[in-house]
Structure formats: C-alpha cells, structure tokens
Length: 373
Image 1 (spheres, one colour):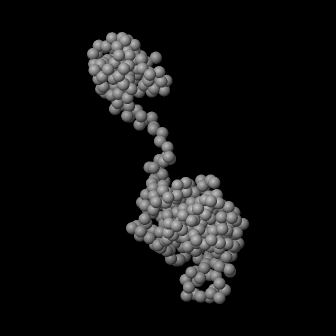
Image 2: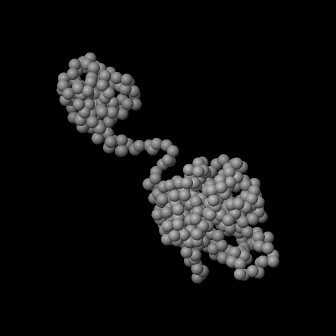
C-alpha cells in the first residue's frame, strides 16, 4: 500500500467558491497553478462533487431558508463542467482531488480519473459512502474535524484493513479559526496513535499563513489543506479562504521549514565534511610526557593530551592506555598512529581518517617520530 502520493502534498480546496460559474473556477485553477509552479511544491486542487438531482430531496429543493440546500442548488454545475475543471487541474500539472458527497459522485470521480478522494468531516461515519469510496480503490484523505477518538479509530481501521492508501488530517472545523484554536499538538497525538499513517493539517485560520505551517511540518505533518479563492468580479472572499498571494507566503514558509528540518527523522544524518573538520580542530592530540623507549607499554602517566591535533597523530578519541610503542618517542613529541601497536591501529578506515585529520605539521622529520604507513 503506497502512500507516497500524500508526501508534502498541498490540498487547495476550491469548494463552492466558483459560485456555480465555470469561468470563475477555471480562473482560480490558473491563478493558483502559477503560485504552485513558482514555489516548486506538490499540490492538488480539490473540488466538491454532488449529484444534486438526488442529493437534495425533491420536496425541499425550493427551501431557500435552509442554507446548505440553497447553496447546493445555487452553485450546481453540470457534470461536463466539472469534468472540464478536473482536466484543467491536470493540464496545469497538479493532482486532481475531489470530495464526493454521495455514491454517484464517487463513480464520477472514477470515470474522470481523479487521483485522490477526500472524506468531508461530516461524512466520516457515513457507512454507505465510505464503502463506495473504499471500493473505488483510490487514495483517500480524511479530516478528523469534530470526531471523537473512537470515530477516528474506526475510520482508520476501515480503510487500512482494506489496504486503501489513507492519510488523516488534524482539523478544527471552525470557520474561521483563531490562532488560539488551532490545537497543533493534535498532530503529535495523531502521529503517536496511528503510526504508519500520513498525518496532515487541514486549517481554516484567517490570520497566519507562515508560522503554523512551519510548526506543523516540524511536528511531522505532511499534507496541508486550506480553502482557496480569488478577489474577482466583486465576489466577497470568505475570511477563512486563502488568496494567491497568501498561498505564496504559505508555500515559502513550508519550503523554509523543510530546509531547516533537513533529512529523514528515522535515521542519523550524514555529517558534512566541513563539520567533521571543525570538530577535529577542537580535539586534543596525544603527546609524550617524557622520553619513551621502543617497546614501552603506554599508561596515563606517559601521555598528556593537548591541542593542536596533528595529521597522523592519535588523539584523546583513540588513546586507551596499553598501547605498545614500536619505537622511541621524545618528550613533548606527538605520538603517531604508526608508532603504536594497538587493535585500533589495524582499522583501515581509522588509519585513513587519522592520516587526514587535524593540522598539517611543519617538518615531519623533526616532530613526527614515524609517519603513518
């Protein structure tokens, strides 16, 4: 079950912000695609699908006093227009993603070749819809929203037991959300409770596009979702929606966070050469405290440790007492690796490291009793 599609994925939720106008929807796609490309991020634009003719009961289609019904009817687009938007997203080099609100919409996602499905927070317990989504065989993202622990446990188990690639977003379903309501520590909670599941952040905040994504990335979130919109034709932009210039700040903050966090968290980093050399310059080298004859077995009284460390010289990292001198070493002279018999002296990697470690010496014949072989 590959979940790589979720890695560092930005989900740009177009939702109903096209207001039922295909031209507006296509402009939103084009405007955000430019910002995505400029920042080199992996992004999807997510649409919402409803089979409106069956989604709203016929006896309630005219109920303008029910906000959800009125908005659904007012923003309805024909399937061919929704297909056109999916194809426009794909043509701009972004992943296609849809939140289907009914089973017919899931089938349309499969027909249109959509890359990823999203479960609306309100639908994470909709058994009929979840079964159809799982049967589609597409990667699925869900937001935790107002769900309790058991609901989330059940949801994760439902998809993972069916071998469906699955990601889970921490989400606070407040539109808009204040900074004090973000609860970013929930990312830690979800990562600990569901190891192996990609955890992300779906947010509706309206004051910050910089700090929260850096914090979330540092905590291990790897998918990031916001609603998007554009200031166009006098249509008001909801406070929780992100405009292109704000998305630019968002993406740049992410790239900076990724740069600062560096490589993978499950393995030790590769230490750069310049760091190794800097630290080597601080290590003490082993020097003879007094004249030492060949065949002498070294102890602590025979050696003092001091900077600088010279190329070819054993250091405080190697000296362990018990080494046998192959030849005499004068007082205050550095003790070279080639001058001692010890188990570590036979390690080819250590020999190569010591030969190139530390300061160059001025006159090897005078101050180094024996060059490294």
